[in-house]
Image 1 (cartoon, rainbow, N blue to C red):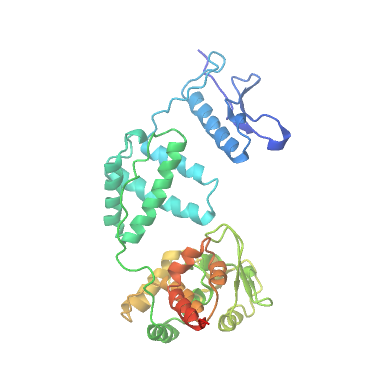
Image 2: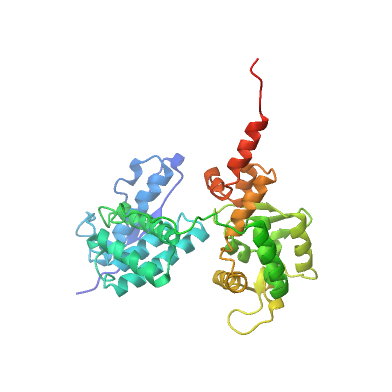
Length: 389
């Protein structure tokens, strides 16, 4: 008996205003194209129609893999198939990739790696996704929290990612309900805005000036721009315009998947002029390393224009060594971004401007960083006094 063969199902789409029907097509055993639309053209919304056609494409592919013969049976089975836990997670991740920014997709991918590793340890990896219940999810996250020494904040953030991943599986009918819903988030161990005092900041600057001046420039750039550490490490020389005094953060390098313009302050410009002196290759990483991995390097070789990108955890290790261990100042490097927002607010910069520079989609996010805002508002309210006449 000859084995059936087919081409991968493909989507045929048109602009909604054209009035043409969308469909999924493929060839079966070398014959004429098979076309299926299965109600996808009932919607006049491009996004809704695209969502339906993607589901149909995936359903047809799975049906063909399980032996469906479209010449004998024109009906496509909509019954959810038994899918292993790991396969389901990777499937949802691929679907989310279509609408996530590069940075967000990396975050989701990291969460998935931790989850799959923990599921393997707990013997859940080969369970079907529709048999996963709330206690499975809780066990997975408690295991990861212990292994990776997650803070409560990290636990909550990754739990949020996983809830979105499972919601994607609900959307594609691989599970009926989201088993992560109802799992309580944990209270933060420490306030997320616990940043260095002005005195501690001065101590840190003086210490880094002596211990690692190149790293100090990176830390100063974090404070002076409000750009996230991972975003700073992705900056290229070409992103810096010293003529216009701006840094252009490209969509693929930022968290918000949008272009972002960050002003260069005079203190930062002094550093950048020195860093970029005699550099003629615009493709170098602004705060880079001359080696792809490993090897001992001189301090001056790091955090300057170079061919390779420095890993995000490298800067965390540097901060721990110089600030936490040597100075005994138990503050996170990322907290300088919080301090920058507070200081800008105190210096009179309005909330909307800070929101734009920091790349926050909502002003509420900026207010979390800039807790100085209430003090400033109260001071303004006092000055806005009118007599009752």
